[in-house]
Each structure stands twice: as C-alpha cells, then as structure tokens.
Amino acid sequence: MKNLQLIYAAILLLSAVSSCEQFQNVAGVGEVKSLHAEIGISFDLQGAPMPDSVKVRLTNFAERYELAVTVSSEGEITVDKIIPGIYTVTVSAEKNEDGFTYNYSGNAVNVDIVSDNKRIEVNVGASRSGALVFKEVYYCGSRTPSDGSYFRDQFYEIYNNSESVQNVRGLAIAIINPLTATANLPVWPGEDADKYVYALQIWQVPDDRDYPLNPGESVIIAQMADDHKKSNLNPDSPVNLLSAEFETLVRTTALIQDNPAVNMLMAFWPSPTPQWLTTVFGGAFVLYFPPAPIDANSPTEVVSPESSAAKSYRIPVDAVVDALENVGNPNQVQLKRMPAVLDAGAATVNGTYLSKSVARKVRETLPDGRVILYDTNNSTDDFEVMDIPVIRRYGAKIPSWNTWKQ
Image: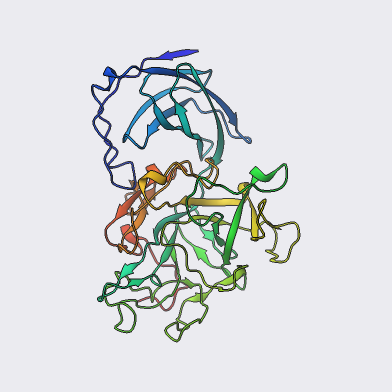
C-alpha cells in the first residue's frame, strides 16, 4: 500500500476542462478537517500490456477543484487530506509498445467522501488509440438575425490520426441512449449488458465503393451539406458545409436540398421523424464498423431498457473506433452515459445556439505540417471549446474522391 501525501495546490483547468471554466485556487482549504480514502484499482486489460504508472484524479465539480497524483500501477492507494464532498475519481494511463498506443481509463462518479477511510473501487479498461477520431463536433446550433434558433448547420469531422490509409466504407456514427446527460441511466437486459452501448440512431457510410482516407485527411458528416450562410437559411450561421463528404439527407422541408455530398444510409431510426437532428444539449456519440450488417428488425440486437418500450440498437464496446461524450454544462460531466474505457470524461460548450464547437487538441505537429491529435479516451482532457466552428481546422486535407470540394 502506498501512502500518498497530497498537497493542495491551485490547479487551473482552463486548458484541461472543455467548459473553459476555471477551478478555484484551493490553497488553505486544509482549515477544514480532512479525510482519507483508499482507492482499489482493478484492470481489465483485454490483452494490452500493464501500464507502468497511472494518474489518479479526485475532482469535486461543485467546488471547482481537484487532487491529482501519478503513481505506480501496482497495489492500492491511500489519498490523504480530502475535503468532504462529492467526487469523480478518474484513473488514466498511457503506454506505447510494439508500435501501438494503449489508453487506460476508468472512473467512479458521484462518490460521497464524507466520512473517513472511504473505500473506492475503480475498474480500469484498456484500448488502443483508434486511427479514426472525432476531430471537431459542432452540435449546439446558432442564432438567426431575428434571434431565432437554428440547428441544421451541425457537423461532425472525422480525421485520420494514424500513419496509414484508412477506409471509411461502411463506417457508422451513432448517438447513444440516453439522449442527454442524466443521473437516471437505463437498465439494460442481459448479463453481458455492460459489453455494449445502446444506439438511439445510427447512420452509415454507404458500402457501394471505397472511401480511402490518407493520414491527415478528414471527412465531414453534415446534417445538411449546404451553405448555411445563405439568406434563406441562416446568414448568421458560422459554416458553409457544401464541401462536406457526407450528409444525412431526409427531405422533411422544402429548405432541405440534395446537395453534392454522398447521402448516408439511415441504418437504425426507430423514431417517427427520421432525421439526424442531434440534441443541441450535447449527445454522446460513437464511431464504429459494424461487425455484422445492421438489422433494424433484429430481435436480439434491438432491445429496450427495463420499464420502457423505447428501442435501441446494441453496439459492442470492442467494435467502437472512437467515442465522444458531450454534456450540457460542466456540472453534468459526472453524469456518464458510456463506459469510461470509451470516454472517461466529457466535453461541453456550456450552452445552446452559441455557434461554438468542441475540437480535439493538437498533440504534435510533424515536419510536413500534419498534426497528431490527442486521443487519451478522456474528452475532458482531449477537447477544447472553439468560439467559431471551422471544418478541416489545422490544415486537415480533403480526400481526392471529393470532386465537389470548393
């Protein structure tokens, strides 16, 4: 057992917390009687190597401060000098081996540390960094000149963050259940329920041809691949999406045109209004290549949570290429909808119709100008808020098969 004496410091999370809100300087909080807790870590490595060390963070979102320490991955941890409150305990690590980057993440949320000798168990999963990542997501919508709300300019940029060519043929994007962050999570049937995430809607890149993506190239999935700054749409929109590679076309109004972008397939949509109108309050998304054809009528893959008739589609956690959880505001970061092994944190623009996006941070810029983006499976750390959404930020390239690019 390791006895770690943690010293309180002013930890500014302006660069690490996607809400851009700042944690307060907590020097002097030792005047409050402190507690200690024991943190037990169990690893589900799934063939990945054991990390050399782990980073343990105890975050109190209500008070805007956190404690953090990096320690050996072996044994248990005793954390001292904890101020009573409600915490999210996050364990993370990274290891490079045999040409792969492995990410380790796990958390325990809404942990009440109000008495001494609290025992906290954290299960930590392992995954390899995906070649394809969410690079930028603009979900909150914009305001019109008359101060109305406009949401048809949403987009999702997918980037090849690897060293090799990737083919997005058949790639699916799904928004998972529940639609918005909540403490009342669904209870799913089956003993293996935790091996899946559950999609409310799935759209898929057609399987009609190859769609190769070179390193440093990206594709744009637009709700509506149009120039949203046009007078008949929203002149105050921040984006022109005519160059988008894909769009989720359903012509529910005369304003929606069939633009040059490739039309995605509506693979699963149980609601009566089949259009990719993702919530402006921040949804949780996954990218994955379906291990089998998506069957919207499958009695085994289409399931309902307990006490509900609503239908969702099961997606194996180990099939997920990348995941991004967005929430409505910083206080909802601990309301997790997906397993920590996919995303141990969350991103937020902290409002609706703000014309802001969340974008992945640059980890490294190579000599040829190509950027490598952060991908630690923790969106709190990996993403930042952008005041203006920009497609193909940081010089991301357009794939050669996009012949309608402008």
